[in-house]
Image 1 (spheres, rainbow, N blue to C red):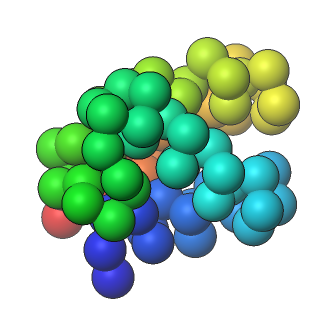
Image 2: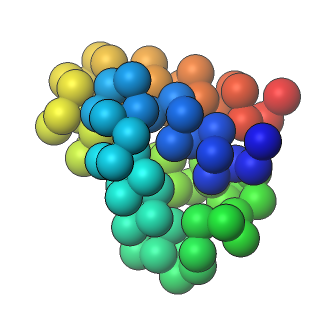
Image 3: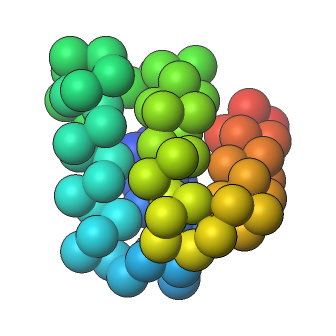
Length: 77
């Protein structure tokens, strides 16, 4: 599974699949100026870090922090 797919799968239960896909696409472009399918694991971690504030507005600060930390570990393993 690609980093993009892992991110979408992990975010979908919290924000829905459509929002997850759009968030990954938007933040990959905004943060890295690249398409999400071109992201490496470390690129995906950078995108997650930039996405955390927006995610916090949707699911709460603590939940967003937990999601980002868990997904970062999953991406790097």
